Amino acid sequence: MSDLPPVPLTLEGSATLHQFFRFDWKSWRSCADGERKEILAQADAALRSLERSSPEAPARTAIFSQLGHKGDLIFLHFRDSFEALNQAELDLAQTRLFDFLAPTHSYVSVVELGLYESSRKTYEAAAAKGLEPHSAEWTAEIAHSLARGAEAMKPRLYPAIPDAKFLCFYPMDRKRGEQANWYTVPFAERQRMMHEHGTIGRRYADQVKQIITGSIGMDDWEWGVTLFGDDPAIFKKLIYEMRFDEVSAVYGLFGQFFLGLRLPLETLGAWLEGKL
Image (cartoon, helix red, strand yellow):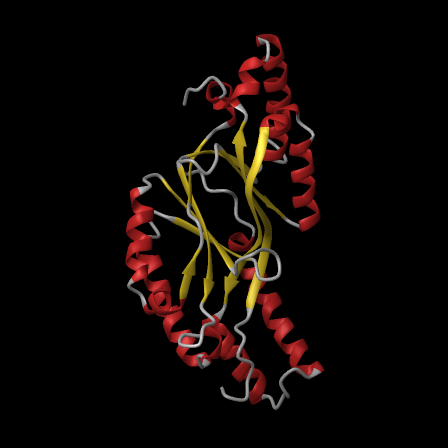
C-alpha cells in the first residue's frame, strides 16, 4: 500500500445545515395576541413546506428545542444539493418568525460514508490491473467503483431525518500535532483503528441513529456527528465508551456539544407559550 494513495475514498450525499438560534422572548411577548397568531400561522405553513416536499415524503427539515444556555432552537435541514440547502435557509429567513431568531451558531456539511475497508480493496484492484495511481485510467476506474457504491448506499447517503425524541450534535477533528498526527499514520493502521471504532458504534445501533457529515473545506471542523435517540443518556454512554477507543483517545478532538428535544410542528404554538 505504500505506493497507493493515503486518502480513503468517501461517498457524499445530502447537503446538511444545522442552524442554532436564540429566541427573542421579550419582543415576542410584546406582540399583540392577534399578531402572534398571524406570525405563527405563516411560520406553520412555511415550515410544513420545508419539513416535507409532500405529505408522504420523508422529513428533510426538523426543529428541536435546545437545552442549555447556548440557544433556544435548532433547525436541521437535509437537501439533495447545496443550492436546495441554501434555498431552505432563505425560505426560513423570509418568515416573520425569523425576526425573533438570533443566530448563535451554524454548521454546513455533507452526509459522508467513509470507505476505509473498501478503499484498500479498490486501490489494490486498480493496481493489479497495472493502472498508474492518478492516471486517467486509474481515475476512471475509481470513479466507476464509487458510482456503484453510491447507488447501493443511496438510502444511507440521502437519509430522512430520524423520528427520534432527542438530537445530539458535535463537530470533531483528527489531531495533526507533533506527537499525534492522524494524517501521517499508515493507511493499514488507520483502517484497523477505524474498524475497531466502528464496532463500538454498531453495538448501539438499536438505540442510536448516527449520521456522519464531512465538512472539510465547508466549515471549521473536519466532521460533524449527529446522533438521534429517545433517551439522551445513551448519547453519554456511547460517546464515553468511544473515548477509550484508540482513534478517539489518541487522535480525536471535539468541539461543543448541543442537545435538542424534537419539536413537532403541531407543538410550535405551545412552545411559543412556554409549554412542551
